[in-house]
Image 1 (spheres, rainbow, N blue to C red):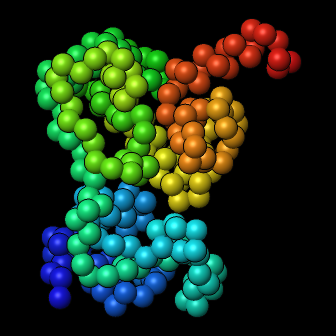
Image 2 (image 1 turned 45 degrees about the horizontal axis):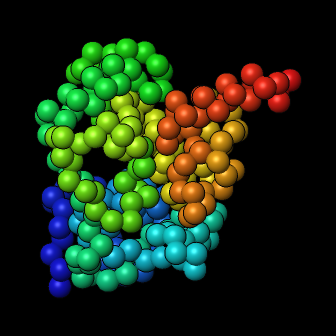
Amino acid sequence: MLKNPFKKGSTSYTDFETMRDLSWHCSKCELKSGQAKTWQVWRQEIGLKLKQDENNNFYKKIFCDTCEITTVHRGLESLEIDTLNIKPRTNMPTKLRKRIIDYYDNIDAYSLRKEPDNKLEIDHRTPQVRWTEGEDKNDVNMSEEKIQEKFMLLTRENNLLKSRQCEKCAETDKRGTGYGIEFWYEGDENWDENIKCKGCFWHDPQAWRDEVAKILKEGKIK
């Protein structure tokens, strides 16, 4: 039997013990972990196999007799580690971090405010929850084109805001909005496998703002 891979006493340790029976469990009254990020880590960093519903979501909406409402349920598919689907992040070299911060001139992509180095985090445009494979090596000599394609700068607060939006999108396939404005410059509110995250504010705030500016300049919105 697979040993619990989490630290004893942690939330994930408790949830793993609950889910050992390989049944569906209510995320509101049975499980302690409330964020989609937790289950992403279970799958992509630990290699645990989670149950999927008929639409291949790693959860299922089921009526809970205890809560007396339909809730998100989660469960383990097996007690084996799926090593083939582990998708780890690659370490960020200090010199590359400095290059990225300098490339963006310390500007937070969400607020457009210039921030000190120690307040900024290097964030992936495509969230890990949407990765289909592990991250390529972050070479210190990465081209500026690759930096632009892959990363942006966010403060910790704004990075958490983005994470919550991306986690919700991964669960519902409904894309988030920028500043509450329902606009996507490619696709619509529904996450599309063909365009993936492109067109969403949270994937590239500056590209999103540029497209809004074009529409306003052309007078398409009155």
